[in-house]
Image (cartoon, rainbow, N blue to C red; front, side):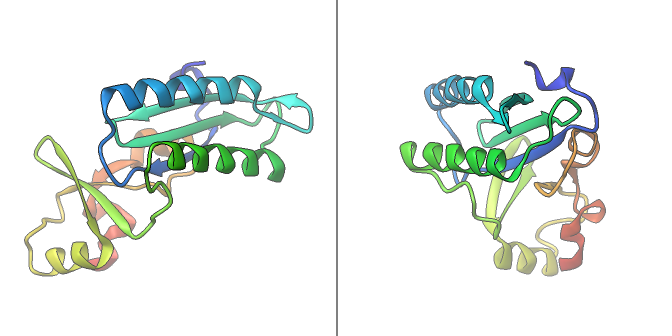
Length: 158
């Protein structure tokens, strides 16, 4: 299923890679992800889900919980799957202390402490686009995933 076809209230999990993925890695990850969601279930009920890789950097799972809610076990299964990707491709997908932002058309990342120092020194502007990986729904993903620092939780470092 295409993520854009899911309802706006669908839950979202964003996993940020510590590096840019190659074209071949993205193809393999998408193949694995689509196989995973084809069999992803909660209490025996198939989940209406989608899987996508954005900008060769972000792995995103979407699930519309109207048909079936993602339970603790199904969420654990998704985390286990993401950890398999992480191990297979030698990635770090769980480092929440790394901030991704746009520098012109390039996506860069910095450790949170370095990012806040650059903000403080005004080497990074409050207009800089950051990726808010804390979004919870598809609607939030569309509206608030890529936003200027001044509109994100990152603004606390200004």
